[in-house]
Figure 1 (cartoon, helix red, strand yellow):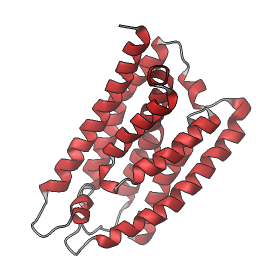
Figure 2 (cartoon, rainbow, N blue to C red):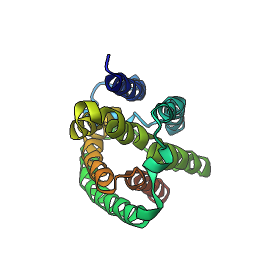
Figure 3 (cartoon, rainbow, N blue to C red):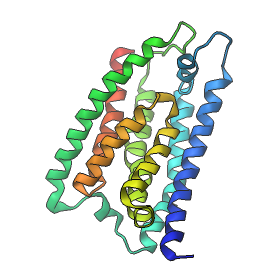
Figure 4 (cartoon, rainbow, N blue to C red):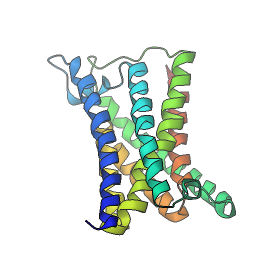
Length: 227
């Protein structure tokens, strides 16, 4: 088999494992507490009903597979640090990331309207505490915001792009990205396209990382202020 195809297969396999593992548990969480009369929006509310378990799942799954992704870069002589940022373009890349974050939040406001379709049978959020905020910051702000971008944007472009074509690879991985977050009704797919734009525009992962991590941190403040 061609060496590029072997590398592409390894990158695709790693991301597929992450996607199916997390999505599988999300489906289990959602339907474990199913009751007759619930609509689909009600069911999906239970994916994160136990946020401590859910956030630990995200952390463990991403961190367990991260060494394999780092090894893939190293074996192919690619500096992951250089993939993330470059000093000469850092200010521009940060600006692109912030722009992507603003667009992400505007899209999020539109998608938040879908939650109005939930009934009284949906999961009711409890008031968060400090431990929740810390775990949420680690899971969404750091692990998801940084590590998932390496998997769903970095591996796609760098290792699958030469085989599938850059745009096709990024789109395929974005489909998996939305599958992992199937319970947000396509929101991840749409914002994933925005983060792809940021990645291609900057050519560095720091831009989508800023948008991704920033959106996670905003979610934390939302839970703390609203709940």
